[in-house]
Image (cartoon, rainbow, N blue to C red):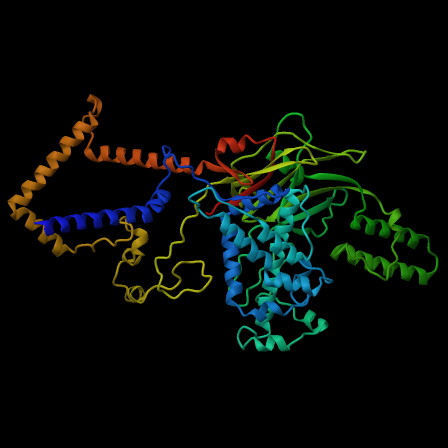
Length: 614
């Protein structure tokens, strides 16, 4: 008897110890991963950044970048691509001018040490590490330091970063342009290595070949032998037979002018940008973000402009007058030849007049009124908007424009046929004067959806955009035979309502007849079906309580209403989750709502929009 009591006590102690262990190990994870509960007492938070000096301008920008999903995807993809390639691909400096379009991103006098840093992607790797740390889900209040990333910046630029009061937009511009340069430098290195055979024939050739500058200029890379059109972004393969998506914060704008006298339109000037600067109007009342866009993209009229075509027309009129006054036949022939050349340039390219014809002095050229407008030709995935609030007067004293700027949560851009929709993900605010103050960040609580890959063991490329580029063998056999229905060849876990479990196959006519016959022959089963149907109808009558007008309402209608209510509740719950934001001030983190964010009209300084996926 004592042995039995001891055994029971031992089992009880073991079970208690196992339960305590399970609670200790899985309890925090269970409560942390559970859905948001408004009645939870535990405070959820994000990772903060310490501020040992005047680092709020750095912390605010890093926190805003940490909430951009497309930027994190780009950083992961770019660092992974560089880790897969051979180190010598990025160690050998590719001369500027070797590839088509080098002048858009790099100057010809760029030093080799800077190009080498671009190709290695130092800031790309450092930013990925700090953003990964900021996107942790801490179980307690956690604060990290931005010093590792600042050391990476100092190493990349070979100079110390000032810790005095700085502008958050300037820091964002430095980081964004550096990331853009590193992407294009890495792309140039991959294309150059592919051309030199380093990726296919071994990387030893790359270290031995030092192409001459003049020979490198002749090796212009053209995609499929077609030169990209003027003003359009260049698309170059990554050397592995794929097209790269590019830096998500890089966009392209185009400036076009038109002479209102002769109607001549010169070639548009294309420029790239990583942050879009909009001037806040100096108004006493509130303004809107649309008014700030109008200040940049509306048509601007400029006087006293010297049009190239009008200058040629003016030169032709002077030569025609000389031709009428000339008495020498040799002089008349010379004037006729000059007129023919100017007329040809006027019809083909007025911006490039013939060099052997002397034009009147530029000071005597006619002055015209022109119209100038800017438009976006390439929309970035991440649109970073800087609201310039600086006011400069004649005494060179600068002050802050504190006008209210109303900004939307959803921002449509583009025309009716090519409209892009953006969603607000981050806001950086500034409180204080023009020379001093404090920066804070509002960051949307976004949980990126998991990347579905139902075909894990199928052959796929490293950077394939589709989850299953190659169908399985049995699917190909069904398609080739043509005996199966096309609906049965779809991926079961995408079409099945059972969440990844394939439903039972459809019954043929013989099986259906057998099942129906069994149901008729078996009285017990038929009685059970009738009892279930009666219970279902009775339950529907009790729950629905129809009025005299709707006494004929069926149970299916009631079930549809309940399903609609559950869907509405799920949508409202999802909307409530998406309405949550983090308000981060260095190491202080608290929750906020969309209403709180949109009310920061006087303090808003930087806006981060992300293009919605179609």
